[in-house]
Length: 164
Image (cartoon, rainbow, N blue to C red; front, side, top):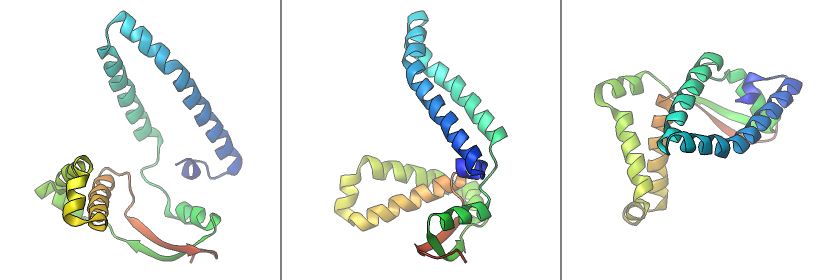
């Protein structure tokens, strides 16, 4: 995300530094704030604090972050890593949105992913490792794509050379 928000290397280095500092500060302040909340109220205060803080972070992210990554920047990042794009596939369509609206398919995928994670041994015994991995990958792909965490562009990469 930082590579997309800060294409300039110097600005990106500064952003990584700020991000690291905030993470360190959060690591130090988390137990202190948690202790104060438990001391003033009870342990439930930590959950209410996280709810309010998480909601504020969600709103701030929705306002400040771009809707999705610029494909040109993604491809430049792939090329700068020394990889070549052999093929670019756009696999998204409005079909998944329609299916979710009419059949709640992503909700089913989320439930299936939860079952696969919770009772992995039974699925492994019945279907095998490769099938379980594919089922879980399919479920998570649909869930992440629907909530906007995943762009529906797939790259087939190889080592070396410039992007096409």
